[in-house]
Amino acid sequence: MKNVLIISGHTDLNDSVANKEILQELENKLPDAVFSYLDRLYPNYEIDVKSEQRKLIDADIIILQYPIFWYGIPSILKKWMEMVFEHGFSHGMGGDKLKGKKLIASFTSGAKEEVYHKNQAVGYEIEDFLPAIKATCNLCGMTFIGYVYSGGVSYQMRTDEESIDMIKKKTNSHVNRLMNMIGREGEKNE
Ligand SMILES: Cc1cc2nc3c(=O)[nH]c(=O)nc-3n(C[C@H](O)[C@H](O)[C@H](O)COP(=O)(O)O)c2cc1C
Image (cartoon, rainbow, N blue to C red):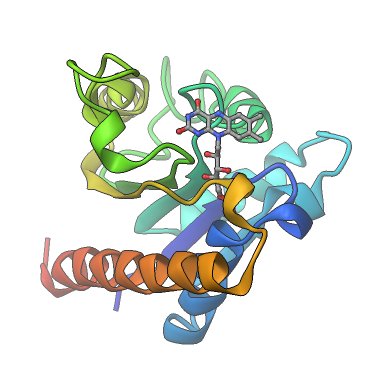
């Protein structure tokens, strides 16, 4: 089995249902994976660059797990990327430490899936929000394997048990899709 690293980019998992549930399930299903909970490790956004770089070096498959915040990745995940993907480490002269690694984007949104459509309120497809991650993979010599996405898990729905149960059903399906993607990659011998 390949080494899996999961970076949790939620800014506050204490105030999460979907991402917390996904991460808990992943911990159960992937006991050997390494988890980096950015909000717990770096509540003041003071990222330990060397520690995060070591985790990346040891990983074969990197999963970015996050909620969509303002149509992008949350601030703490952005900060992690800005700090950790250093010139000379991930790109630029001598920067080949991420080369050959695989990356999966795994994310949730408050708006329902169907709203992410060019003819709907958002005006864009969900894939339209991925170019920055894909370009980062290209620059760093990583392969973007794909994405796993669940919509309609808004924090406004955390008001009653029925809505929370619905979110949990969605997150189960999310984890199954993600595990399939990881499994397919794990079987490849490259
Ligand atoms: C600051 C902030 C910005 C958000 N921006 C968006 C957004 O741009 N699009 C969207 O569909 N949902 C947005 N949401 C909703 C979150 O994506 C949603 O609450 C999250 O995916 C649920 O996961 P959680 O239970 O793990 O927090 C936003 C939520 C917050 C708190």
